[in-house]
Image 1 (spheres, rainbow, N blue to C red):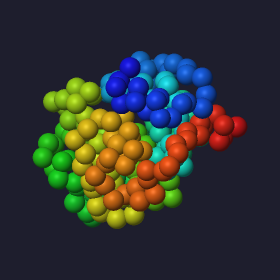
Image 2 (cartoon, rainbow, N blue to C red):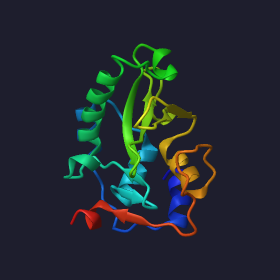
Image 3 (spheres, rainbow, N blue to C red):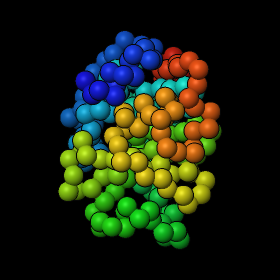
Amino acid sequence: MHPAVERLLEILPPGTPPRSRDWAAVEQRLGTSLPDDYKDLVETYGGGVFDETVWLLDPECPDEDYNLLSQHTARAEILADLWRTEAKPTALQDEAEAQVVPWAYVEDSGAYLYWLRRPSQKPEEWTVLLNEGRGPEWESHAESCATFLLAVLTGEARTEYFPDLPSDSHQFDSNDDILA
């Protein structure tokens, strides 16, 4: 298990029993492998919301708003339209084949957390890009998704997009509980 997921387990137990996903099928549909730390997060917690703020997308969630595969398609279309009139983030301009893949979003803000996927990198080398959602600002974080999530929840992240975190106590609300 990824060290950041192990640390998250120390501060925040999962709400539901872990269950595995068919990662080969998910990755085939996405057309790319996914980082192991993300798979660890989803298999440990499932989809849901951390501290009422960060929604982890789950490839098996029946609700399209919280489904990794559905959001990947939707965000690709939205960003393609956006980039007809606005400049792409610098990180995407540097490499023609670079892409973003959403893995979470921020409650009530429109902000999305993406992986920066470069064809020259393995998924374990992907870093985090945050788009403010209701504007052109992008923020780059040179860490994996689980490491970034841990930093946000503990107040160690260098970002202005989570003003209500860290909280005094942590909670995870599973999609199984929220959407049941």
